[in-house]
Image (cartoon, rainbow, N blue to C red):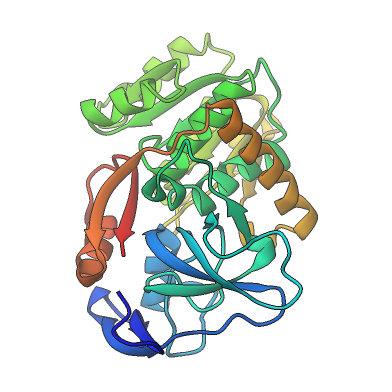
Length: 329
């Protein structure tokens, strides 16, 4: 809740570092929406791995300090700026970007990064759409050129992007394989689009995937932890197969010859590189998925705004994701 008419609570980062640099302040000025912007009363905000990298100062993108993290909010329009006609006060919405930051009671966002939130989804689910689903769609189709009938392996399928990729791939007619590190994680993904799951903590899981994919291999791999899995991924690909790098936490040594034998590709994926036209394509596909009923975000750990540092610690140190982490505002 805002503590006065013109101030609100917001998490501020004044220096790069560990989770302890996330400070919740209660006297941050309420932002005002300018031309083509909206002010949103935030009900929930998704927590994305990239936000931990940016906060630590290890990411290529370094915002000017101080800043408030958070791009994926769900809430209610509080006010609109000039020239905004598609939204009005009281509308339920979700975002895939903010201007003033989403770890706050209120946030300002550009109107073209704000989308209507269907009554089929609650605010927590709305906060779990943004980066995960836009990234998954971009990885599968805009960069990975996946086609119906192909086989996709989602490596680390039980987190936000992984579940999104499984739901989308299943809806578009792909054969969906996934990995997770726990029985619970595997079961969640099987309920959300995967045809077959493998436990990546088992020593022989790679052999099991090869056996299941009938020697030929998989056409597309959505990779969340490339610094651990990339060399293995190259062994699993079909001729002409593609590994889509969605996440990596460091370097890895690979043998380039492994790409030559199958003419396979390693492709990086970043929403920051997507044009407005490509983002609009993602938006159109995902809103249709919500309407059709197959896009249903799985909400995982929930933290109140006061526990934001613990949320980041959990995200970094978790041994296995179970759905999308959200902050409740």
